[in-house]
Length: 333
Image (cartoon, helix red, strand yellow):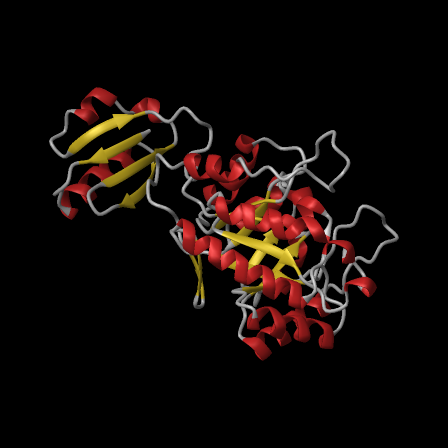
């Protein structure tokens, strides 16, 4: 249920109403705008008389939310959520570029790539320390050593780091990680999502390989229901009957998610396409359709990469793409 308060309502009146609502065993999500205050009521709202609530002098309107996702719903919070990490921001008109190798391999490699993507304008450094691979015989990442090397690259460049968690038992290793990524295979690992919801770190949540947007938002809701409101949604392609690309990049998800939710939405064209030549056009298309950021795989020696070299741009290719994305961004804002 959503309650919109009239402009000019005093803080004392708001506090009094919230106290009464909480006495009805409801959680209250508060969203302040320039001309309004919205109270999102979470719990058994059957205990609340909508007509009585709507008759209050300070109440503009009351309505029920029919979608199962509540806290990430734009009706609950009309204004965009902005995720701030250091000087970098995602959402609310802020566009972020996240770049780096699929997996961390050596200190020399990750620092060289970090320096290159920063020079090209990247806002975040991505790199896999724990790698979920389809084959058990493929490179699985360096684990804790990979995180240590990412932190060394952060020291060298100042770029905040993004890396994926696979198991909640490894959470202690992510104490100094800036943004924790949940991969497509773990989008519905609900125990993991709930534990991440108890942290105070931004969570980059990737859409599952065959999940609907409603299921995607319900996974975000799992995180937010535990108290963590810092969720970044990532469209990374879904599995369809086509075989020419690794996945099918669903760019309709970007404006649709913006319509449904206040959370920032970014796009990963590398995992979506799996082919170097497809990454630039799809990254630029993501910018054009209103994405709040892109995440691109960049490797200094893709031919010898231990993971996903076929979908990794060289630093100079990323630099060229970054320039073109900025031009498109300036044209549409």
